[in-house]
Length: 234
Image 1 (cartoon, rainbow, N blue to C red):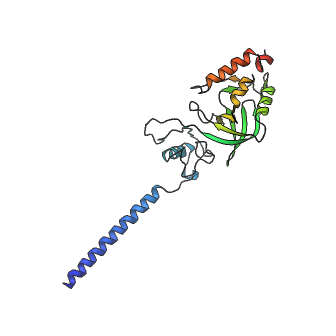
Image 2 (tube, rainbow, N blue to C red):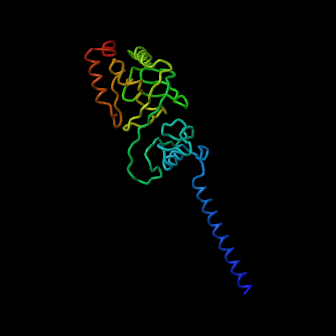
Image 3 (cartoon, rainbow, N blue to C red):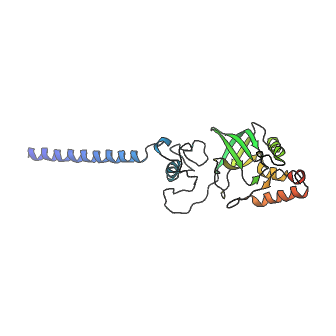
């Protein structure tokens, strides 16, 4: 009888140990699944972007791969690169709704009539190409280039606080790595203001942009006046 009791005790202990080991293994596996990652864990930017999207990006970034909050992970990694911002980066094939990136920043420098350097709130300095407009080039110098730049500087003095807003029909960046954004100062759409002042033309590429109708109205107004390049560069 005593032997039977001892045997049952051994069996119960073994069962409890087995359960504990299984639970430990399960916890370890779960911990491995959510182990923190950083940019050094990926060989290319495209690989980091796929992981970023598969784990909640750009709405959520638990691994802190998107330092400046622009929806693009690990931008210092070598290409191949990916600027996709829809979910399911692993190739699930489902449809997604394009996201709009909104960021606060302060103007550091106006480069020319349609390009500005900003410091993102809590982040680095980035170059922004204003969506939907094109101003005269400074190199080689085109008619109105200096005045278009001057107009942009009047609208965006150094230190001005602005909102940067992406467009769902445009990529988040251009091929040069510049952020593609509407630049909003208070209630003023600076991109459109440049068109209305006559120092920029409406610029439509790819799938266009959502504010194109209002920009074309502003351009017709500048042409009819005429203002800016429509007066100076005839």
